[in-house]
Image (cartoon, rainbow, N blue to C red; front, side, top):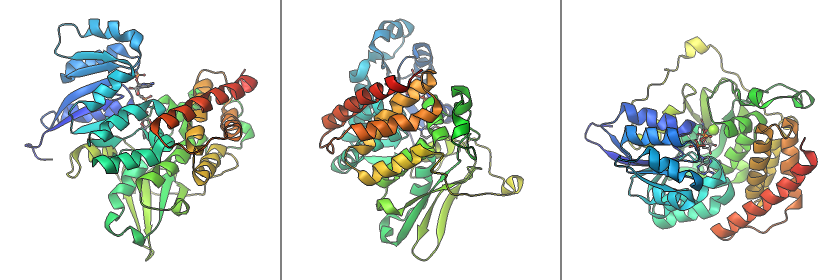
Length: 390
Ligand code: NDP
Ligand code: MG
């Protein structure tokens, strides 16, 4: 990026792992960026400190009960404050050129949609929104001339090597997966794993929810659905390959047998920097890839018997309709219960599977349909949870 380029940016989910990495890059490139809005859900002090440091125009706290605390923390500063879902939408609607959508879960859908509807460039980390409402979101992207830049490392990799002009030459996309902390384990041996063990990812430092999703491999399941919406391909053209070193971030195979890949150290600041600077490039302070140091890259097929969530997501993608939204909602409920020590790790796929079986719902036609499905699936999942919780 040249010194003369300047972009205004809003960060939804500023206090999270992706939010922090984004702000780290902005801090180092302050000449190129100014911050419009920052949001969080409950971490008021962190949000206020960031708003002051970056001179944000607006700071929004998702949990409305915390608005007085945020007001007090930002009294006398130039930052305006707001709260609740309305506030999150307002943050997305402010006139930033780039909106980093990094709220976790379906809670990010409405604010992300608000950014899309004003034709912004949306750097999309929040994969759950595409899983719940991919068709609707992509329709809105087209209708409003928004630009969607995938931040998720695999999709960012594919975005960098996918020939959008001649997509008929693409034979398949290969999403790589690290396999998470429990790669190679038997299903039975996972019955006693703790939240601390599940969130200890071997390669990536991420928020708690996505770390558990990586341990169950639901993350890769959500990502195949995400890829299906982001790229002009058929469901049958998406493959998952376990690659424990997380060096190849994903690949595209073409009709002539060529396979193009994007490689790098496992550090989210690379795909985030790509999205912030696009279509230019900017410096990111990540460890340079030394293949000589790494020595060897290995690959294996995913074990669908152990990582049942991946299979459930594949089936939900093939089924289409409301299934991906139900899958996502049930997974959010199950992961939250696991993190609160109320559910065993091995029961996460059981909750998702039971909820998919008991929710027989039609495909969503509108955003409010998506929220109805999400609500119903959460209610259903909570009932299945009550039977299995300890
Ligand atoms: P974190 O849990 O670290 O951060 C989540 C952010 O969202 C925080 O700012 C949090 O606020 C806010 N938030 C949480 N719940 C709500 C809510 N109900 N309403 C509004 N805001 C909320 O998550 P990550 O940064 O790890 O992940 C964010 C998204 O990016 C996820 O969808 C994830 O799948 C995706 N992603 C993340 C990657 C990573 O490396 N971390 C890689 C690829 C994708 P507070 O801090 O106050 O709780
Ligand atoms: Mg990913």
